[in-house]
Length: 262
Image 1 (spheres, helix red, strand yellow):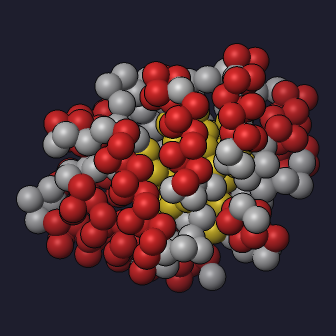
Image 2 (tube, rainbow, N blue to C red):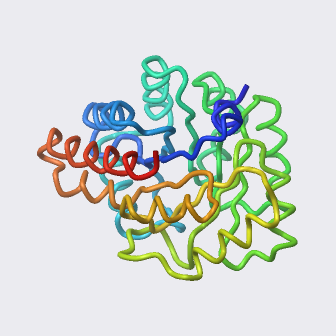
């Protein structure tokens, strides 16, 4: 069973940290991810570095630049996932990818991600209507499909996208690209409640969350999971030459978050 299906069947609310694979380098990146899991992360969302990340703000753009400059490519990202999976066989892992990466390599990329036991993939630059081949390969290699619901997606369309997701559905919290925000808008909270009326299938909210309190608020509003990325990536950027300090800061954030939501 897909690990996301298993965790949501247990009716658990989950916290999901996001990390760009290979940031700031493969060794420090792996240690940061291990520290995050051992601090209580319920699942992981991982990104492959890409030169034109149109859905990402400056924080993740710089994160991907650091990873690419350190020599990270698709093969090294897959190897990194194998290392994570070997140590943590049960943790759900999803990928937030740009479709160009998969398209360039073709079917072999899906096979390799399946071999690495990835549970779900969301492509932020691939409209559903143009994703037939992608969805066919996802089914062939038993990779969980994750559809995106944007802030301006109609409720009719949202209901359709919920039904087309079989790992979870990714709800973008607000307008704009990724990036830490100081506070949640009333729109975000109302949107979660509204979507909860549309479908009882699991949804994870991401984009902009940056405090344990925001994670708790999103979950209390009805979301099944919450993703924090840019805030944690800022710590990696700030302490890129002090990897232990980055680990400590991220570990403290996760522990504080889990205390609030458990």
